Image 1: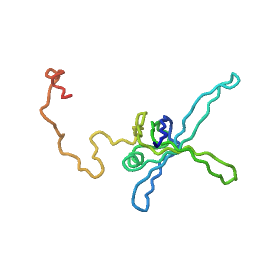
Image 2: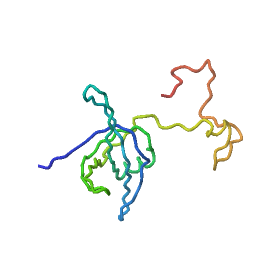
Image 3: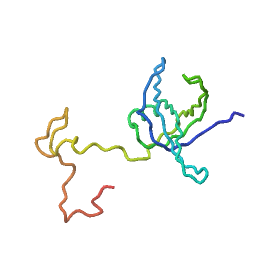
Image 4: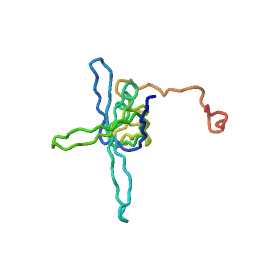
Length: 152
């Protein structure tokens, strides 16, 4: 029977995702995640960071490319495969590689700077400014507004 190694991490992206395509046209997006942990050694509190290299394929690759950027906090679960390699300095190195099955941002998406938002009533690029305000459904005055009027 075959075994498997699955890992779950929560950490911060160390760099913006990078997207590449295989010769067959399959999209793969990769990024690094820093996972901080606190340890106590000899009564001294130390913070250490483990770095994971994440590869995402298919829909996960598109999601990572579109919604993730450096600094975002993210949950990743997937297949874990540590690998060793020889660095440029001739020393043996360990890479903690994850092929993502699930990617979920666990922080709020970055908001646009208030100064970058269009002014109220300004037309958006590629869209004509309406001559009069659009209305959706019938308008209610304050007296008619109650819980039953809210559609959700």
